Amino acid sequence: MKKNIALVFAIITWFAVIAQCYLMMENRIASVPETIIRFFSFFTILTNTLVAIYFTLQALGSGKKIWINKTGDLTAITIYILVVGLVYQLILRQIWEPTGMQKIVDELLHSINPILVLVYWVMYENKKSLSWPLIPKWLIYPLVYLVFILIRGGISGFYPYPFVNVMELGLQQVSINAFFLMLLFLGLSAVFVALGKIIGKTTPQIKSWAKDRQDPI
Image (cartoon, rainbow, N blue to C red; front, top):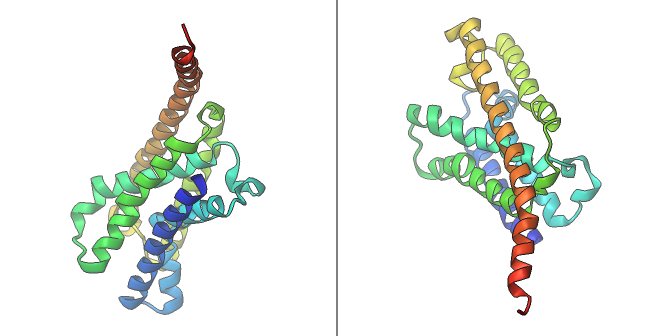
């Protein structure tokens, strides 16, 4: 059951990423190499690709042998993709109106896929293994990404998101925006660890209660 669900989710996520790549190449305003770099400069694309890889490995049953199946990895991925969805819904959705295939792909990347990952987390994450020391590790990916886009943006002049555009907003405002984004990552991380601890404590009690209900009087 778990592998089948992972396979379906992998197909959906890969379709969204590949379709977005095709659409971006079809409508490119820069050279092919530059367009490819810009494509992978979006946190949305990197994170959805990470999700697709995770689901693919889960479907193939090889996740236990690699780094992406360590304790807390699914929770980290869930946090990343939820940030993708939240930032889009709260900030980016209002600044453009995609149509046709682009709209479908857009909804998959920013709305459907975050929900799929959250559902998978609810169903299969080992929640009682989540702990507070994992949070700093989860923040490495968004921090490295932020440094990368700021450095490359300063060199190339291309910033994937308007709220990190130093040329238009200035470094001070971008720093403020980045600070609040990191607070979002940190806050979600704390919420998931807290939920994991709560669920980890209540699950044995629920199982015990269910067993008692089934025992003959």
